[in-house]
Length: 281
Image (cartoon, rainbow, N blue to C red; front, side):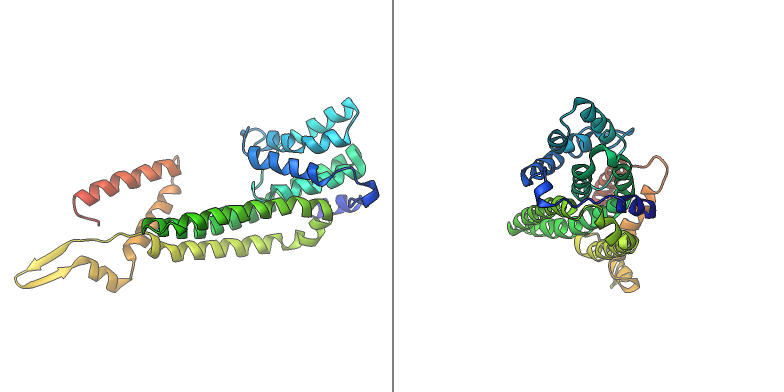
């Protein structure tokens, strides 16, 4: 990260209004391309490299009239790139500012910024948007839907509109701030990512007893005395069964060759079996 900041500081990347070649329309076109095609063409060799290049084309066409410069820019942006799709517009905006000021002379700074930012931004974007917000609003919407409350759909719709609007703001912020954003937030990335991960785990933990409903319906009878097995588990720890189920899934996912799809099928099959045997309700 320090190397990225040092290389970026050597360039003045916030263009004056009179020098500006890139318009708001160009940035909007870049954002729309990323929004619709950010995950298209994903592959194990370059991951989001193809989508990144596709998204930058409106800016590249504006900046590089020489065919040779255009070829060089396209090859540069086809290289490996992988980050959270929610925070990638920030990097696209910084890249646009760099290239507008110095073109391919800033090739090293472009590569440095992309490489230095995509890792930290992946942690922040996936934690906040992919885990925390998605889990919270998705669970609330699903829970309301299960209870026949149509407002749950509206909540999920509004959240996604807000997320799209915020990611659109990211590209403008990245363009206006240029590589200064690296120096401003670079040292806080690790702390912010750790805090987001802790908050995400806390939220998921709180949702377990709310969303997951699983009880043991077995009742033992001896003469006039009856004993419900579920009440014993509740005395040990309330919601013990849901917590045990979630812990079992996490344990399964840690096994070699185990995938989330396989885990889902295992839960479905075992759920049907246990329900019919009246071991779970």
